[in-house]
Each structure stands twice: as C-alpha cells, then as structure tokens.
Length: 78
Image (cartoon, rainbow, N blue to C red; front, side):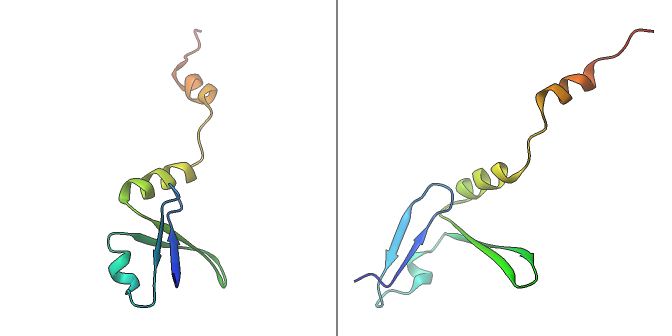
C-alpha cells in the first residue's frame, strides 16, 4: 500500500513509495523547490529532472510581445 506519492510539476511523472521505503531513496535525483510568496505563504514544487525544472522555470517568465521587440530595431528616417 503506497504511503506517499510525488508528482513532477512539469511532466506529471508520478512516483509512489511505501512505509518500508525511504522517500530519499525513492526520490533520488528529484528536485524540490519552495517558492516563498509572502508571509506564511510557500508553494512547493517537485521535478523529476533538471530538464523539467528548466521547462517549468522558462514558462514562469513573462514573454515580451513580438511587436515590441520588432519596434526596437526600427529607426525613423529624419
């Protein structure tokens, strides 16, 4: 009977472990991130690999609108 379960926040991979297994053995290689959001507000995320962490981190960065980036290269003729 599984006692605990850990799910990758990026790809959804699940790992279950029982009372006989140590979580540190079963989750070897996993990354666990705590995001401090404010006073007594912490979000915890689990990732099965650095690739999943990288994919999730990249999705957290707001994208700059393409039209803004294009406008930086344009020069006005005077």
